[in-house]
Length: 319
Image (cartoon, rainbow, N blue to C red):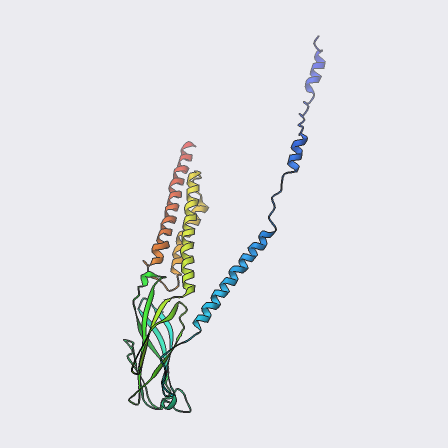
């Protein structure tokens, strides 16, 4: 028999019972035993040790370069106590102008100078140089000799090979004191932080002495130039990979990404202009990294804009 109408109404007004979900004991045990990812305790110490190792290597490289620059080159020999010492400080290399600017100071020794002062010659000093501009330097007798700026010419080098460009310069002197030839001893000291000077060849003819200096970029310039080329490639490839992901995922126009890509495009120009030594446009640095990095960034930026405009236009048409 069917239930009375009033009972059926009462049954229909009762709330439905909530279904009970029972989690199996094995599932609960599996969830409780799930491993928690932890960082190995030795990793922070390894990172710290790597940082300290790089810092120590940098200090050792600096001390090695500093000690190598502290030694002066001595060219020529004095047969007796009477000779003319010419101290040359190699101050600045201008690779674009093909010149080596040096400061020259004359010190007479023995009977060639006065006893009470090392910088006052006893006779008129005429110093002939290998420079094409200041060919002759004159120092009157009885007056203190001052330093003179002399420009020597560079040869056998090309600036477009930066940072692998190398040059040669001939630094030579021949002197007379009171009209009589005297032996000359040259002391060379380098002061340009962007170049390294090494003695290549020494020539002695009569009382004159000349030395050929081999000039190349310093170690710090090499390291910075290599780092800049690697950084240019890394930034360009990062932009290209990000652009490829945006296009592949059909994300449309992502404005933060476009701002980053445009900033990278102009940041590469600033980085290239900060290269030590001011290399000209068209050097090896440009063909090895800069031109290609700019091209890749521009391609990635354009690709994101074109593909993003198509995606955004398709969304508007569907709406």
